[in-house]
Image 1 (cartoon, rainbow, N blue to C red):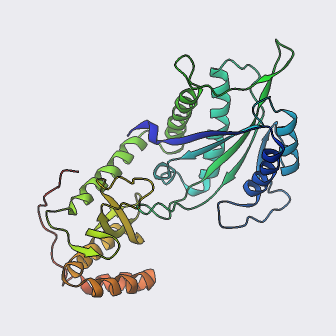
Image 2 (cartoon, rainbow, N blue to C red):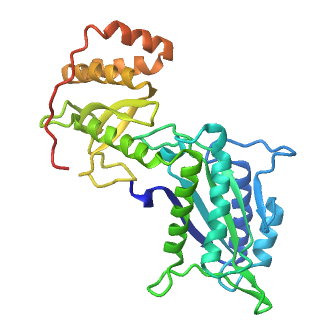
Image 3 (tube, helix red, strand yellow):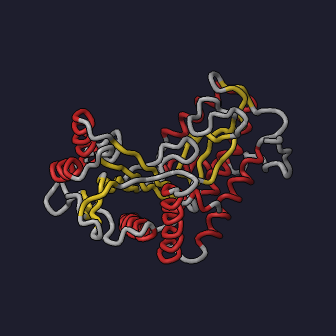
Length: 332
């Protein structure tokens, strides 16, 4: 796999102005009481949200230290560490929070060690749990951390706090260094939590997805309103489940706005692989024959319970045709 896809570590900063200080307090509240745009997180004693490594464990403490440790140009740095949900799915669910916390700690320590900042830099982090809203792989567990860093750090040799920089130029590129450290720590932790075959397993997952993309033949299966030409098919979501939906060149996809990129839209997710394959073949024939009926059937299947859908698949097994042996790929 491309190791740059293992974990995203994005860095931003806020200026030391009264307006940004007010917005920072609002940001700290948001990070404390939410796991995303939706969903309030109830607080409770013994369930502290913030991992305190010198910046505090509450909204008031962190906001105060951001202002007290600011530099002339930076009130705070904020960093999001977001491991690839495809890889997180390989980790036993009860170990995922520990995995992301350890990844955060090891990356922060390794990054500042690599920069020669001997005593490190104060930081605090809060972990968020959400499900992915990626139209290709909806519903994957996506634990990640939001990290807050000060605008300065204490230098023992200088005997004072000095400005903290995240330079990005030809001489020094701290962003590239952060990504390198993150990928190294991620790979080491995957070896330990999942096993040394995790990369092979990921490549097999991607290979299965590539085979499923081969539904694209010379003629689209149908033209859908507001979407255009589509091909019915399935896409492996993770090692346990597959989604059924349509492939197409979606121009409204924010992640891939290039209309030449073939993308998948999941319509029914979380299916066992064999069940998804059967439903995909069934819906393909229906889509090619009658779009309105296909729409109605998709909605009916989505409304079914897992048990109802499994029983339905059993009833259609004798009527669904075998998938074609060979397909013709477009040049994508």
